[in-house]
Image 1 (cartoon, one colour):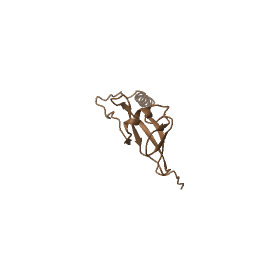
Image 2: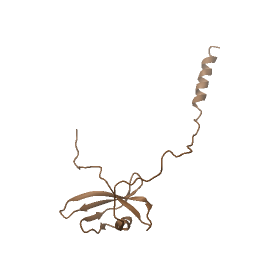
Image 3: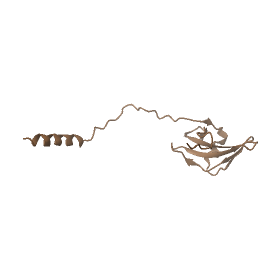
Image 4: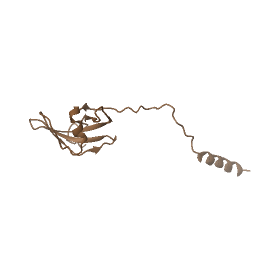
Length: 125
């Protein structure tokens, strides 16, 4: 009798732990699936050029814009590195990413993404 209760309690505990919890499905989505558009919209005249993976240069009167190969961002967007040189020779490296939605003329909007790193100098503590 003394052995029966500990064996029974351990058996009930193991039986409770071996059952999977019930599956719950939400009837209302908790998160909307809207696409966030971060950055500055690039003029639509450059959309087709950025969509073409063979484009290496964007024509511009004020800047020399060199376009690198496309890559997929961690959020799943198609992005392209840009190297922008002004008339004084100052170089900025930026990223342009395409939205997933197509516009009426079947091209995608491209956005100039804000820089995360403000300085290429690393500080070690």
